[in-house]
Image (cartoon, rainbow, N blue to C red; front, side, top):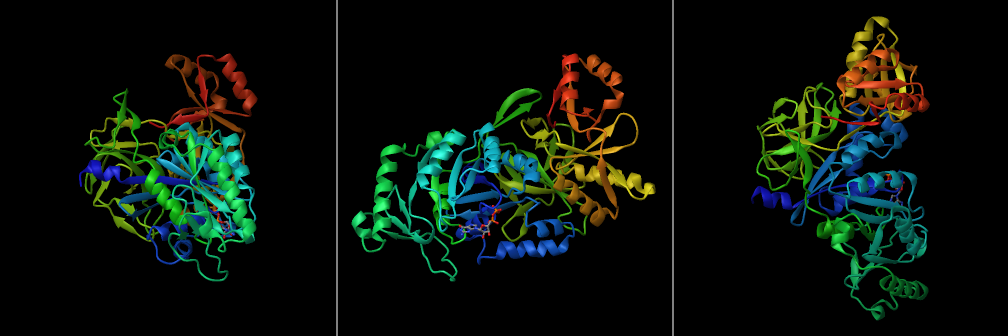
Length: 531
Ligand code: GDP
């Protein structure tokens, strides 16, 4: 197969949801439905194994959240799926945002009893920024649910997204009987055998006529289903693949991830409709270009760095989303900033294992082991001339001063914090005056994770104290002299980030507003796109 045909059969997607909606359960069941793993519980078992290896994962375990994101590749029917796993906890949303920049499609999981929740909305907005098509999975139908039409109305109202149900459920909770395939008219039966392991694979289907269901469904449930189907087919627009690809319409599948119901149907929906790798906006030598998956030269961008995946090595793994060409093991790739890397051991992530990738194509994500040369936002290509746009660095919402208990170890602490900041989840700022280390994060939990990691991986006892600043903004100006003057005048409220870019460190948002008003030639930004 040519690299063009290979790229065309990639489907790279992420799952977005509010914590507890069932993302982990759905992930595991998608892998089961896709044949990537064999028995339920194996993802969890793999997780447990990993956890015993690394101390800092204790937080993950104690709080039941997943901190580290990864990618899982599996083949299903004629396609290769790359499922990007995103951490669910709110404090790690920045990481999630960046992972979404590497996805071509998203599955939005809703809890049928709750509908759109705050985190769903936030993540959806990120998808909308890039017009990523979204497939909706309404989960937990085996529990008492809101009326399905209410759920769809909510999606329509809160997300301004047209809904096109591909299936329609018959009741919910104790009475949940299954769902009708609105395309074929067949009825997918919910297999209710409490206590028994659910059967993996598509649901049993009853051929499509209302009569065929008489006697198989309770009369009131049947009547409700017939009425519901009539209403939605009359009321809602038909599924339109173009509107879906433009990010304006979402197909909807109902199910129960826990009972493996609707999961194969969801996977088939992704198979039939999820888009192949998209063109990506980039710059070549500062000139805007579009990179097509069919372009012969290899290119991609780093959207995530994970350190210490193997505690015996200090190596880190950069996750590179390929955007064009045919990548071959051993290739030399260059970044727009002049870094060069021979990629001898590119990793491919299968559900239960890592393998060396001999080849990879647009849409694939490979792990590039490195010693810290690569950063989130780096673009790699054969020519070294391509820089992809749009991987944001968000201004942290919390700033803390880091101090090590043993003052002799301050230098070690700086190294440790730098190295953690290079992963891109937290930030490290150096004020222009003094030797403070100011760490920024989007949530309190990240400071706890850092404290544990600094202890486990660097053997240092770090304390995070209130900082003299609470807000950080990156600074830029068309006029370099004006920027320099501003920095000179504001030494006590400025500093640099890990890459030496100038930042304004302010007590509060009001200060930022005031400085901005007084210095119209300076731009204060809450995001910096790495170059
Ligand atoms: P996450 O936080 O989104 O990853 O959610 P989890 O997958 O960890 O699920 C949260 C809880 O909901 C767990 O107790 C799951 O067993 C439960 N759960 C997930 N899917 C279903 C479902 O379809 N039906 C029911 N009854 N419970 C579910």
